[in-house]
Amino acid sequence: MPHTPPSLSPQDALVAIMIAVSASDEQMRTSELVAIQRIVHHLPIFAEYDKDRIRQIAQTVFDLFEEEDGLDALFGLIRDALPAKFYETAYALACDVAAADGKLREVELRMLEEIRDELVIDRLHAAAIEWASRARHLRF
Image 1 (cartoon, rainbow, N blue to C red):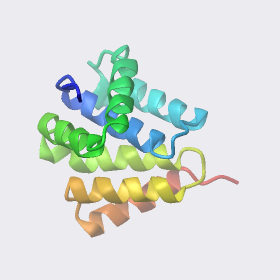
Image 2: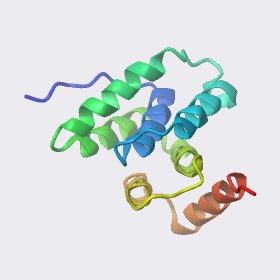
Image 3: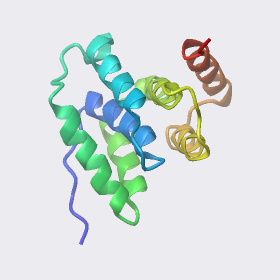
């Protein structure tokens, strides 16, 4: 029987989105984890966030991924916790995590598409966010 996951704060929801993208290919890469840590430690939106919650939020995401309708449940939690004006922020953070290792895998692209759909991100805005993320993560 599925358990009821805890409710999330807006920052928890952003962390959950980043972890979901990283875990979508069933292998959280070090570069992705470092990107999540860097984001949480440096962006103003996380200034008051208890960074010790990252592990708990990660476990919630992993638990939901084990359930049959877990992804739908995760998006429900995220939409409940995150004001709509931060949906594009969530998508930008997800893109940054996906791009962190320099490779976008098919399953990560599908997860980003799912996030775009679930959070109803305008296609033109999504393209701009994706372009900026790609530009930030280019390598020589």
